Length: 547
Ligand SMILES: *[C@@H]1O[C@H](CO)[C@@H](O)[C@H](O)[C@H]1NC(C)=O
Ligand SMILES: *[C@@H]1O[C@H](CO)[C@@H](O)[C@H](O)[C@H]1NC(C)=O
Ligand SMILES: *[C@@H]1O[C@H](CO)[C@@H](O)[C@H](O)[C@H]1NC(C)=O
Ligand SMILES: *[C@@H]1O[C@H](CO)[C@@H](O)[C@H](O)[C@H]1NC(C)=O
Ligand SMILES: *[C@@H]1O[C@H](CO)[C@@H](O)[C@H](O)[C@H]1NC(C)=O
Ligand SMILES: *[C@@H]1O[C@H](CO)[C@@H](O)[C@H](O)[C@H]1NC(C)=O
Ligand SMILES: *[C@@H]1O[C@H](CO)[C@@H](O)[C@H](O)[C@H]1NC(C)=O
Ligand SMILES: *[C@@H]1O[C@H](CO)[C@@H](O)[C@H](O)[C@H]1NC(C)=O
Ligand SMILES: *[C@@H]1O[C@H](CO)[C@@H](O)[C@H](O)[C@H]1NC(C)=O
Image (cartoon, rainbow, N blue to C red; front, top):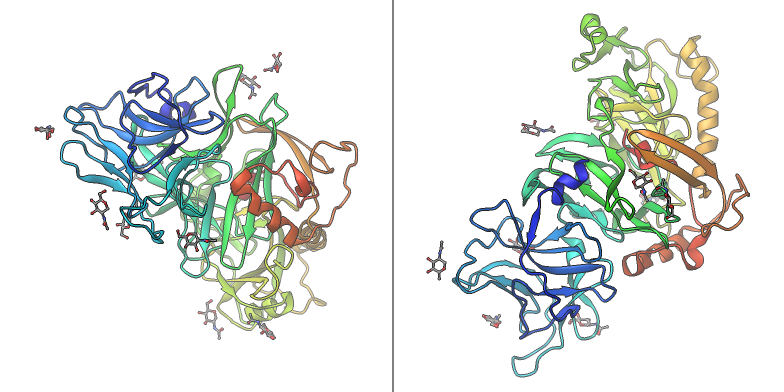
């Protein structure tokens, strides 16, 4: 299993294992040295120095790992690209500076700071009166520098390594387009930054990417306003994993949460470039992989070439050409080489109309036009002769409403890259309105085509489903996910396992309630409590967003 290769088979060596005084914090004047650890209050996580056994001469890293499972699994590394190499002379230390409130990792040999945090707002203090600042390792694995009044000055959750823990966020800020990214390790025992990364798209905001360097490996479907992206149940446990999208005034982020009873669960970007959902398997004492992406060649970015799409509703996902296109090279295409994609079988003219394709993962390279209704979005594309497609979503129920734009009109010009068919009503799918040569633009006078006959009822269904989805229905998804096989059962009920028999009942919830509830996540990282039970929307699985 790829998961374990990361940290487990790497046979990492813990420098010392004596049960040193396990406090959960570092305070000024009491530095942490190799061999000592601090442990979160509930014993789940530990912070300390570790050294991959494969490294000679030994390289020392400061990291956080699970403290209550027998397999050494690192979830965060501070000095990924600056290991301490001279471990013979005075030992390196991690200390909390009283004057700056920064954590500083100093090389013992020359006292040089090899890594330090960047606390910007420094609490008022003088060397004579210590501030009461502390670096605390929380029960969710977050290392937090807290000012005396309890505000968070810095936290490791905002500086992720290769692991996304429950409550962590992958954000994109609307203004600065900055946000967190997972970065893979270089190798199984080498925490230095590898070439793979995972995060929000800084150019177009609404989608996620897995990159190899700057090259996209995989792309999520553009966000359609869903809030619960997926739900998993680790086999043979009562726990559940919820993946959630939240959009606020400032940012949009992906996070996830565990219900009570769920085992340790993490997303990890492996050194070989897979994004995996892993869950601790107590009976096997190993990590079980609940999900892994990319899921196959067809799910890789642009695999089907320009104007091609991956039809993942087929038993074996296959490349096809979008309506109005045919393979650029029929021989290559039938031989399973899709890189040259598809070309138009008839040139477009300005007045051509649009064919609605439901259940699509819409292509990359869109331009978002602000503040448009569906009709205005259609008109925007229709009157611009270089516009070849558009898609629309209403984000009113999933975005903050008071100000700002809650419409999502996407338009495309030129080639359509990385399109897929996800299936009608699948979370994250859109209706793609594709301009077709010879199709009249008025809805009353449609040309006769087989595709159209199929597409029209589909549009209806899809908009109903989309509406239902946006109306925040809570479908409970019980899925067993592993090795590409999924069994799923949609049950509708309230969270908390109550009334399991009530199928397909829609529950309506206001966005504000959800935001209020999700704000709790980062602190409590559990949503199986309180008013959050009456939650939201359609679920199949994250697989659906990541074809
Ligand atoms: C803070 O204190 C450290 C020693 O504890 C010192 O090296 C550093 O220069 C001080 N920084 C400032 C800004 O005073
Ligand atoms: C390690 O540090 C000691 C003390 O500063 C120094 O004498 C020694 O040369 C260093 N070794 C290496 C390999 O840098
Ligand atoms: C701190 O900020 C400096 C300058 O902005 C940057 O070079 C450095 O990487 C930052 N360090 C951390 C740990 O974020
Ligand atoms: C807490 O302290 C920080 C600086 O240490 C300050 O910026 C913040 O305003 C304080 N918050 C409260 C509620 O006093
Ligand atoms: C990642 O990129 C490197 C360099 O471009 C390439 O050698 C490698 O095969 C790529 N790996 C994957 C899994 O795409
Ligand atoms: C643990 O692993 C075994 C064998 O792979 C599997 O049958 C079982 O369902 C797993 N349990 C959990 C909790 O994932
Ligand atoms: C499920 O868990 C029960 C009790 O923990 C155990 O007896 C059973 O063997 C497990 N089944 C599988 C398939 O792991
Ligand atoms: C037409 O679409 C192209 C491509 O999206 C865009 O660059 C151009 O500004 C649009 N023209 C008008 C008049 O909107
Ligand atoms: C959106 O358009 C309406 C009228 O078309 C206008 O009143 C409103 O201010 C616009 N909102 C934004 C955010 O541009």
